[in-house]
Length: 193
Image (cartoon, rainbow, N blue to C red; front, side, top):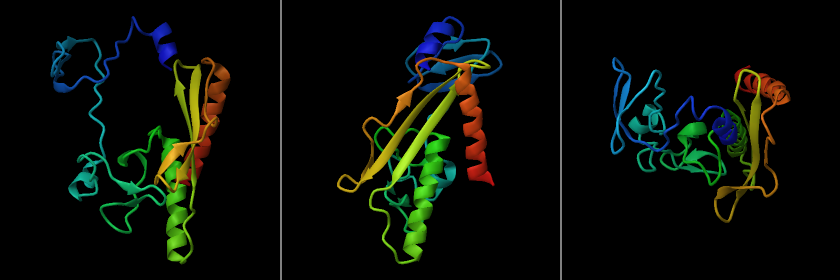
């Protein structure tokens, strides 16, 4: 993604990561940063600082730096409240764990399995796996992907990336667009139906 961006968009779209935004003047299309100079642009896409949602903050579930929800990674049960399971972008991610729709779907499957085991007085899976594939459209037809597999490590009580499990697109291509569309249909069916 970064290579395609650099090769095709760096002189068209400016990306400014790690800049703390103090104010946005929409009428004048200007953004003010804490240390860096203000920027005026034709189009601004301002992303707020990432954190768990307001409900997690208001209920005390966001107990890690007042931003993220700490969980027991084996079951996704909250560290702040028993029998509350949290997944997706709200959690403090394990090392190298992406925040993606596919990963949240994997979280949900592990959490559901753990809940069923607990309700049935069965052992929770000692080392569950999570999978991830993330597709990015870099144009209207060209797509790139990244994928990985993560396994729960009982000794470290976190997920670790399985060596050799991941992959990256060699280059943006249209075939990956077909894969992305099929992935989207499958994840929607799995999550929403």
